[in-house]
Amino acid sequence: MKLSDRLRCAAGCAAVLAATIAARPASADQAHPVIGFTVYDMTSFIFLGKEGAQAIADADGAKLVWASAQSDPAKQAAQLRQFIDQKVDAIVVAPLASPAVDAAIQAAKAAGIPVIVTNLAAGDLVMKDIVAYVGPDDVKAGESEAIHVVDALGHKGGLVVLQGPLGGSGELDRSRGIRNILAKEPDVHVLGMASANWRRTEAYTLTQTFITRFGDKLNAVICENDDMAIGAIQALREKNLVGKVVVAGTDGIKEGMRNVHAGTQIETNLQDAMLELGLALQVAVDKVQARPVPKLAMLVMPQLTKDNVQHYYDQMFVNLEQFKTGLPGLVKKNLASGTYAEQ
Image 1 (tube, rainbow, N blue to C red):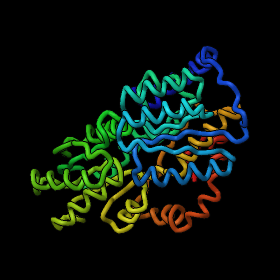
Image 2: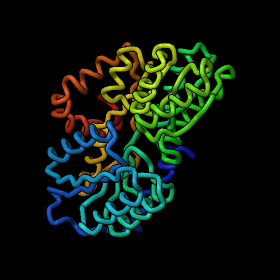
Image 3: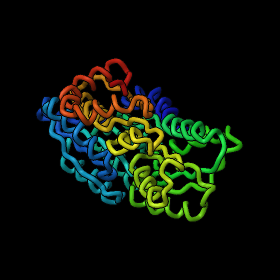
């Protein structure tokens, strides 16, 4: 069952669950809540997302306590337990896939601390008990990448897929979306699928391996995020294959948009880090302050191609300070309307 289906089932049980969860004692100062926020790693996406979360915290008068697990599940579990010991008012977590992290999230719930999961899902048993999930529709993002690549190949050729960390919800759902499309394309052949863990350096090395292994049979590289696409493009450039091998990515980070504009990357899907993590922070504050919050806030990413990428690039990077200034109002508008990715 995909993430959105699991959470919609959970939403139907929310009222029953709420009656069984012990209430957390009111904060000494609900007007200025303390929000613990732990992320899996400081990727390009998360680095930008931190700015959005801080902008919302500043606008709301909240204190943001930030921590990065540096891709270490034990470290993230320890960070979550430290938040519990500190008696923060709410926790936001972009989780690593790990039983230890899941157990720490459940410990926070048992302590009466509201938990909001963002960007990536935790384990199924944990997800049913959280206050909210704020994150992307990764299945649709994977489908979008695959559609653009298949069209560029003329519906025939060989490709490889660079995946995120295996078993994480981002990898599972984006891979599912990619497979959904490729299953309908009998003349498109998947030569290889392997994880580069969202990282440019690993994607560079893996793409080098694929180039050596498959040679002229390699016509495209589908990357499940833009950081990996950047690494893949670097490896292709060294073999004079840029423009000859199609590359697609997801996230809409600055370098990814530049590659789309330059034509070295055919497409990206804008997962606006500042908007997404800002939404998650706002949901945490709203929960602490007893305002209604959505159980599921799923962001459908805009598809960025050479035709429209300049608009989004200007919005997010040329006029970044203007975008950040308007972010608190945009977040509240999107939460009220339910169109969470609107910008």
